[in-house]
Image (cartoon, rainbow, N blue to C red; front, side, top):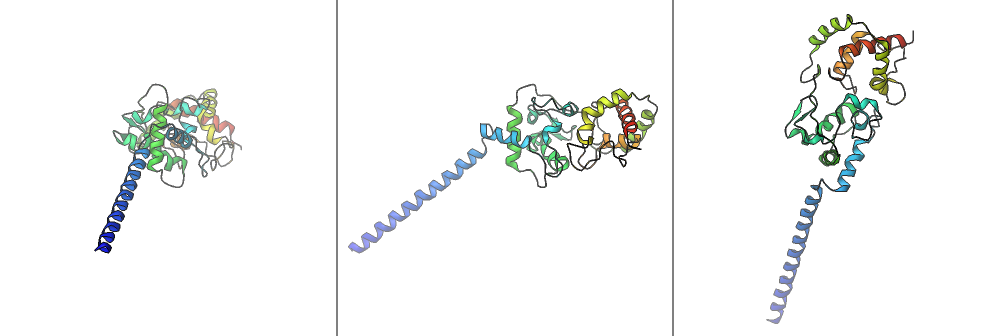
Length: 250
């Protein structure tokens, strides 16, 4: 009888111990879940900034090359794209292609840039998206909507480009403005120093004719982004083309 009571006591203590262990494990999972959802923590925001300034091994590009967080405006290329101040709070991004709840889910368009322009070699993770959103929301300044007119999205409109080319071809180019615009934006990649795998304007095989320049500006190519009418006008395209053609090696 004593042996039976002793056995029952041992089994009861073991069961109680397992229950406490399981409860502790469950609590740990909840704590991890709560921690991963804490996108306002300083560490999470710092991680977002790190990703924003992370350089792609393939292209040599980073988010901060095109988009301003308010501290990198010394790079004139950021004038031609939307800033990221509170970007995840916008109603739409990427020229209206991403709207509503998808703005935050896609890191204000960062998921598109990650694969299309940066060529990071892997999909961006949900944690990285959350970190980027936390960083964008930590930045001080006005949250500006970013709807622009583009031939590249929502659908590729090459017929409109043909119409534009007739108009641009009749414009009188201003080579000084062309040089200014080229150095502010195009030169960042096509200057032959900063970004990998792109031709320099002085390369013999660099296509500097009007049709090629207009096409690449309006539609982009590979990891080159497209430019809206609001950021680069038809006159600017005429001017940039003139500058490129005058500076190509013969």
